Image 1 (spheres, rainbow, N blue to C red):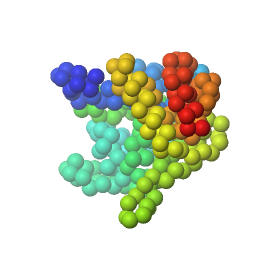
Image 2 (image 1 turned 60 degrees about the vertical axis):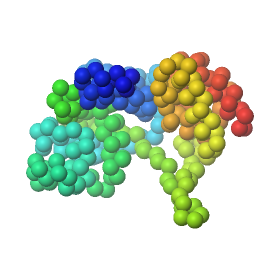
Image 3 (image 1 turned 120 degrees about the vertical axis):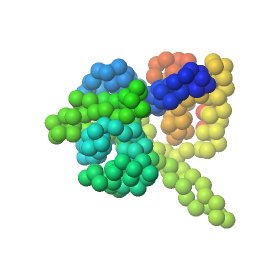
Length: 265
């Protein structure tokens, strides 16, 4: 699919859309809201039926964060993409920013307290929630929607998903390794992750993907593999309760993944 996107004559636009497909598969936002947003329709309520809604992640009031981002988009007359927006929010004096005088905007640097990677994740959530859309025919510039305007002007509140990261810790002889930190499970129970199991799950995922001729993340994204390592479901029913696994994937992949997990329990 990636090769097709590159060779089809509209490489930038098609790769962006392909990335949107991957983001949909890995999102922590109601699936129905994402699909409606992609096709230009806005829903302010979750469907309550998809895998994300049945196993919702932790959320917080992200209204101020969303307002900062939307304000920056407006002040540039909606003529920027995601990378430039993050540079403005972070107060980065990149060539693009200084070349267009964006360092003079009131929103320049208002988001210095948020790491670039987190800003990327928050913006992706805002896109999925329908607060802005990408104009693929205008160099992927960001355009605020009516729903986004409501948040920007204080007519509504925005709820965002809490971001969880793996933190690297110092190892012996100057090397670093990833620390096994508690994961937030569907039932709110803490757990730790086996790196050996994670690699085994990745191997199984790759094998299944190759059999079907699809990218591995379509089978299960890394986020779901991490949750499987923490939850260690030993039945197909428990496998289906993991956030990101719907009825279709439970029936299609449950037997293989559960059989593998049992070898590590």
